[in-house]
Image 1: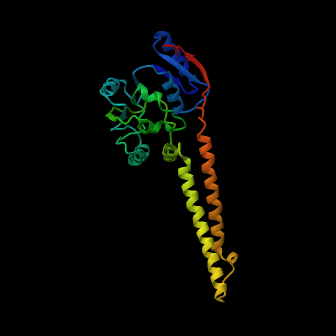
Image 2: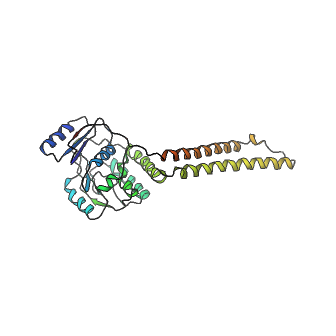
Image 3: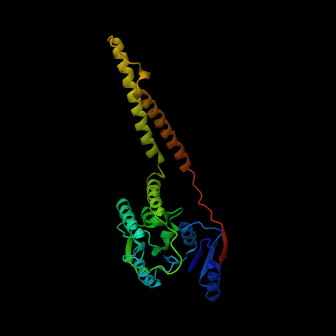
Length: 283
């Protein structure tokens, strides 16, 4: 069991140390400061050695009794099993936005899960070794697993207990951040290896739109002069300046695509998390 203390200000690390003294099968990782749930999971995933990896929050709202069921589903052939808190003991300010969030994520990802954000999940070891999560991407681990070649994703209804201690540090802003993260992870997945396909397409459309408008204005001016028709000066027409803006934006987007292609040619390093202490991580 790997316990991660994400820079807490209470006695968590003392409790983890005490548990380890009683049973050295319990390991501990303590961050210098709070990095967030994704960082805690990412570091623990690197240390996990078991064939089946199960994650659980420390707020006592998940039940360890669910572990055998999750384990058997992974052994049955699934890559990821996500818990589903079908009956939640949370205020309506969390349940209604959560249903909306899960519905949108389900529609965009094509993964038929009812609760993407449930902390109680099980994975094959190969899954956690082949995904990298950061920021707030822990909400989309099933999506990341699917995109990394692990499409066998299942769901299990799990018990959800009312919170007895402490308070949730996630407010309504997490749902706005969640949608922004969904857009980000979707964009990165589709265009990480081919950014020119995105920026180049938009740049080409913008550039040729501006070019076509400019050409039309010039042709109109030449035709008017040849026919003796009074025509407004090209630079006196507002649409000309819109065309110039489209030309400039198109060129910038195209250059952005080239720069992005150069950047993706170099492997980016994973962020380093400063670990303060460790307990017996050598299995």
